Image (cartoon, rainbow, N blue to C red; front, side, top):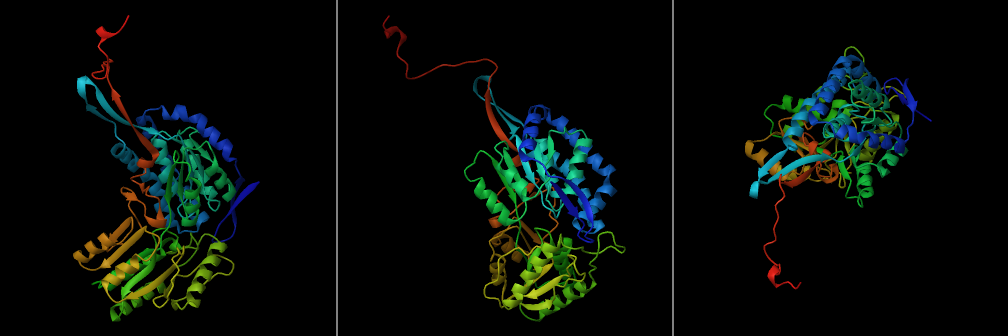
Length: 474
């Protein structure tokens, strides 16, 4: 059976490949584990540096493939390729910092050593919004630690996944050390259920993450790292530069057509004329945003969402907000019939009694007006998610209060909610993750510490609890 990938912008077939067998791929990764894990970390690091060079050599081809398969603009696809390259050196630095070898002196000339071992075979399930960068953020640290990997890309972006794995192999990573599993949800479920994996590293929706958490509940011996979504708040409060605040709001909400887990979903403002000025500036920018195909010239700000099903679902969610009493400020339109292009939308949901606490994974920003800063913080926390939050404006003391009271894993000041740095930990709380932050802290879930008490010569005695040998009967 073949899996077919289509370009979101045109509907044209882009790639097809045979679906794989999870058990066979896990067995191949298991067979390759002893040889790869026994190599020194310096060898694995140099191999991954060659991978970074291979990506650089194919930068233009890789970026165009990402753009065509996801629909994101070429300029943005290029930044994703750069992130794939940059992940290698960041991961090497993180591994040395987070999992160093240590030895301490102990009594009688012995030593206490702390070293780290790989878990074994790691399954990686990748998303479609960053089909190279996000799985690469799991795969590189896992390989560096000595694990082998079975990678199943999203069924919506298999071509990018296939090229990523090809570049690992081209760089000298053994074919058994990184295995590619092509397939849809059935293959993903089969991989997660394989007895032969020692861990699962997942990036995707909260609903899928909850399902995996339940599945792994009786398997504490297997590592599970979940990087999930968010219903992220952006609070704009007495911003001195309204134009800059509007730019930050637009960047937070509409980059990648809103298909970022860190995208702002809720814009929380002080009720009154100041928020009216902000909304007016945001609308001016929204009117200027180019929505277009990934290779268009001039380049668009945002492309389509991933497919028609996603666009249909977003339109249904937007309609639901309207039915519940949301006041439309800018409609969510479908400018190209039959294709998943969506225009950025803004809707005032202040008066909704029961606002849905859902991740609207697309270019929809919900406006909420509140009377005071305490109410803004309470509104920011009115979610089961806890990935990203940002405050624009306010004083240093207000940011301190915001940072202290808002529950999220990424908290910014006068910066967008998205664009988290790779040289810092990345993850959330609540429905946004399971306390396994990725990025710089990925080393923590790719290896486990081993404590050893060591001495070159065996010395042993029992000081208490023994009978006098002279009192023993013959």
